[in-house]
Length: 363
Image (cartoon, rainbow, N blue to C red; front, top):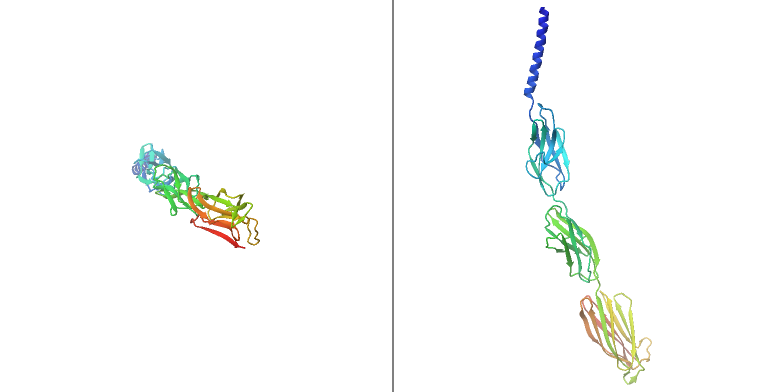
């Protein structure tokens, strides 16, 4: 009987000791989680990296949700943007953020006892590059052209400057020639002036925000070559130096730069007058010859002896600007004992200089 009581006492003692340990464990457990939020890293225009640490409570081991919350307003909560991440040391790579925007972020933990949040950190996403398109080239003249640009995306920043830049070398920058646009429009037109004729140019649109200057696609063009109109007035005679020719005959050759020679011929009798007009493009030189009677000093003949060209004049006009660049009389040509058989006119459009030479021969 005594043995039975001893066994019963031992059982009661062991049970009592076991109950005391559970009570101590309950007294030492944590009721709430510990949360810390680290500074945001790898911040770009639309992405960033979140890091934090969450130590779960030990009194209640049920986890409903945990991770990060963020918003554009302070003290974000679980009804804002939520990223759920399990574990103690947590991190998340976030994308699809708005550019140049301030955000607030903190860790969070939810269990049956409530919602808990870590310290709040803030960050601002970066400004990205501008996306800009150079408009196609239009209305090319000898010294001007029209282009422009469309800003498709401002990069999330403020457009500080915009316009077009150009050069005779590829990939022009704002350190070359430039024309700024002062409007507030994201699409604009630009007219570039004071260009050199018959020259290859390269042009790009540009725009600048806080992130820097971005250039659009490159367009290229060649300015036009000026068109010039030559007008000649010539009167022919058949009776000079006491000798009478049957008729007079002369030839005119026009050569605009390196183009093919343009030929004209005319014949007539005493006092007949002619007006000649030709147009051509040039940028370097124009040569005109007026040759009487096909006279050849290497093989002189008297076929047109007595023929005489007088009252001659030349006018050269820039057809693009309607400016007269040369207006001059010409010396007479004749075939007699002394012969003046050819006038040669050279005109330089670059500086407006000219030279008129008369070729002569003595029998």
